[in-house]
Length: 372
Image: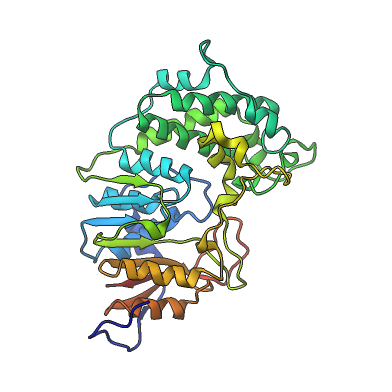
């Protein structure tokens, strides 16, 4: 990490307390919202607050470096910003392509019929049905996924492909207990037990119904602003600099050193996108058949500090906005010190306590660290 630039004050960081949530909620009505998602760590419910903090900043181009389901990038696009989305997961690249880069293409009923039926000229593999029987979905659902996963690449238009991947991914998440693929737990759906929650109805809804629902939701989310937007799939540390603003929302590493493993959570969706090579990438020693390899420096407490330092130095000429949790690694104070090494004006804005789905952490505060 380079030394502090000349003229950078070393005094206290400006701290702003929890925002007025009524004001943030009101502001949320001033921009378009992306479709709802079951994705871990999504910032969709915080968009009003994030938009409130970004509003005073002057920028025309932005990079959403860990875009996930592209909710923040979608917010920026709706404000006429030329935004670039990046994520190291292939499925998130497709989502950003469908909802942010794409400005006009939609799926019609003919497309949906093409995607969901067998075609006489195609010799379909049954890889999902053979490999994942009894793990994530029923036998009938696995057969349906085998067909759709092999039909999507046969569509000529890449935006139609991306919209279809968005729809099938959301349908898969909605039919999964916890909306994840971190363990083999189909039994939670199929066990004959008394249930006190309504997920069973959603789980048992046909894949075709869910798929078409999310395809229509994606269609409604497509819009044009006149600004050029794009999506890409790279390692965050390999993305070039040169944007007016860089928004950074990396995987969360808790104070206990446990990182969120998005690759492990969504490996099944990644596998579908690489269907011809899926079998060569699976770790067959594990019951839930995850993909082997790929550990991110952003999910490891031993490497994340150096990764942050390298990243901030690379984008030191941009406005830097970091979404963060108050109890993460590196610590809030460490991250503020890193920002102060490159930026004269550094402030920390608190949303306050915010609990993500599936999280039991009620004490961590949601933060935005802004350096300019």
